[in-house]
Length: 137
Image 1 (cartoon, rainbow, N blue to C red):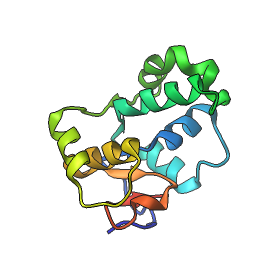
Image 2 (cartoon, rainbow, N blue to C red):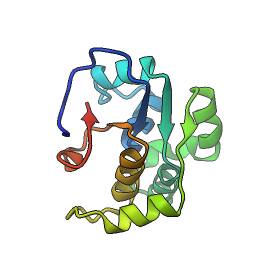
Image 3 (cartoon, one colour):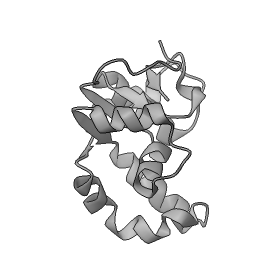
């Protein structure tokens, strides 16, 4: 599992990692063509609620100034894109905390747990997810 793979058919649903969603909002050229195709053709595009927190925190700390203009409208932007908030519940949180994965980033752990539980392909440039769940980039 994990690693890069070609998009050969329409995925029923994908989960966007924080940077993938932000880059889709800003039409950032770092968003790969495979990611763009997956986002455009998926039946449902999900974003984890923890993504909103991660963006807001990084804006507040001055680590992501490019996202500052969007901070007040993130929920509306997701709806305008036709996306949906992924579930965020005790089951997701428990799996994130108990996964046998050395990666310590709590945002990534929660996003990975969501993808695993809901059997979603993760759209992410981050190779830290490889070997943990299917990742498309």
